[in-house]
Length: 248
Image (cartoon, rainbow, N blue to C red):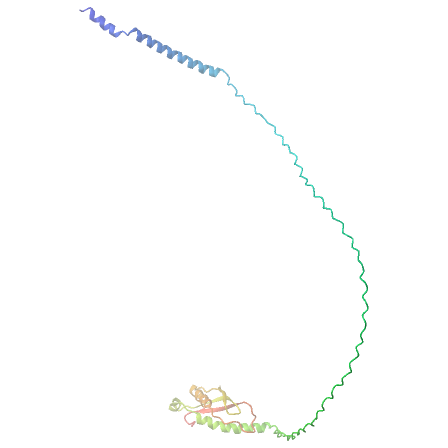
């Protein structure tokens, strides 16, 4: 019993002959393949590279040929129709007309027109001549006035205007209360009908109340028309107007 057991154990550890042959075959195949790969690598480095040959290019020559154009069709023109000749016409002159017998018509007797009636013409009536109008001679123009006469007439008119201005004058209460008075020179223009055209103060008083009262007295108007011998034109006058407690 003791001698058989160790042999069985050693047989179990030893490989079988089929497995050993398979391992040897696989190992040999691997070695051969490695040698082939190494040989291919060495051959590739030792041999020069093969140049690639380009394919030849084929050139095709093309020639353009112009074809002749077809000739136009010639249509034959129709022949003109023959014109028949015109017949010749012979003109035969007509026979001359026969002469007609002349008939003489006697002229009619000229009738005398009746005499026109005689109109009775009445003589025109005499037109009475207007009586001549009497010639009215304008009155002779008055001789021109001298400067002295004009000045005297103006003085007479100013003597008529001054009392009218004094009657229209109203003394302000402030001058009465303070016992003050003053004088202002007023210039104004009057038409021949006595109408006041304008008025203004040319020499004022230091007191404004005096100036206002003098101008108001003239602006009230009511002047008479010019005298007959005065010039009929607008005239400018200058009058000194006194305004104060004792003016009226």
